[in-house]
Length: 296
Image (cartoon, rainbow, N blue to C red):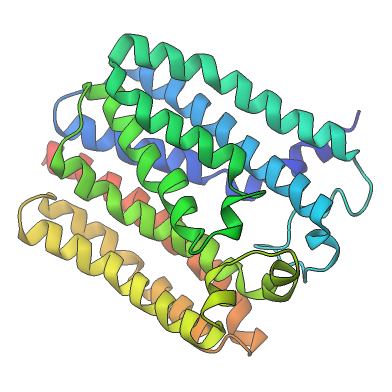
């Protein structure tokens, strides 16, 4: 068994998102006076397992549908390439995805029993997204909303809830940018896969809107992230120190320029990397902002 190949099958370059999401949710709770290290670590393990399950099942279904053999692979899109290269067997990859999902289930049950039943709807929705996203939900209009909520807003709120045992309006407002950012992470990565996704019956935004309109929507949603943070601070829902998240604006500008010039690979490919930095660093700096607001 080649452990490196199995590790690469999890698409580790995308797994950095999980600790960032947990960090932000925990930082918001810590700002409000709640912190349990054990809960934080357990929540991270649970989310990481679900994230791996999502990535692996996506790879499996993309291979079975033929998408992986038709995409133009980039460092940020087009799958791991492991199944088309026949480095692993499809059934083994599918089992890995299911096993990771099942390992996360007891963690979710534990948190529901310990922190409250109000966590259950969030977990059930997340489970549906993990299991049904690639084979079914991508064939519905605007599937990026599912990705944004399932690997953005919901994990932040979940990490917050297991610390506090409740949901609050300020926490929801703080978690919204995560949903938009993860939405945009998938959104921009879909541009190179448009033709292959279309043949497989998917209805991603670059397909349903066309790339020209989709690029404009990407610009709009990126701008909304920063306006949301600024508005949150002005209205008092976010602490002043969360303005640190605005430090990623130069990366956002680079991503926007690349999105507008989606036909120019010399600009679009660097934009994919800039987009990843925007997604990860904006959320991380939001969390840092909450910590600074508590300490200063």
